[in-house]
Length: 284
Image (cartoon, rainbow, N blue to C red; front, side, top):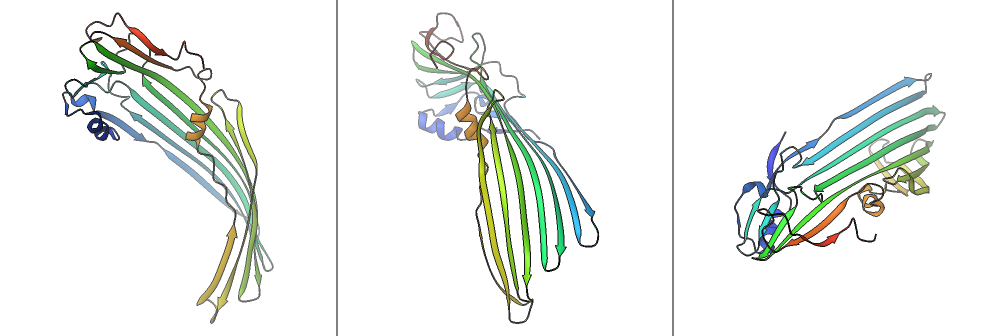
């Protein structure tokens, strides 16, 4: 479903910049498409009377496209001399995320023990593309007018894709020590591998050992009251948005930031630019 909406924090930015009116609604509205399919499957198989095996597969896909579907034919124009915002959005953003997981486990009851052992594999990716095109001749970007002879055109195109791979193995046991006390304990191991935009390994975290222990004690009439406690160590996956920023390298996926100045309105005459900054020619 596509709905026009105000860009995040846009009204706050407009107020702080001193702008007090919008001449063209296209400068602050966009068409956004968000969402994607989620698929999952789980199979259970009895292994005799007291054991069971499970195999599960999941896949999650989400695409966030802001301003991508509508044609962009002119830049955003910010006039600080009149306080008027006009033009178009000046660009678009695409953010795609995919998560795929496979897991398998075997559970069995042996005497006073309820045991479970399993392995898991998970792969995640984030693909971000931001386009206020830095290509000369493109109509995208943002033009700021400061006075009659100072116009600054900001252009940028940037994209980064990062992945991770997570391996997991675990074992746990629930041990009934009589009619009232149950002791639960287990151990989980995770290993996470962060993949750079060029497909090479960026970092690895392979020492994520996570012990767990707990108890349940039934007070009074069995099944009516219980006292319980637990301890566990947990590791969280490394956020891929942080990896995206940290591993960003123009040589992996070329992008460009371009800032150019004019002494006249470049919408009328785009010639005669004075380059203030160009990441394509600046040292990294």
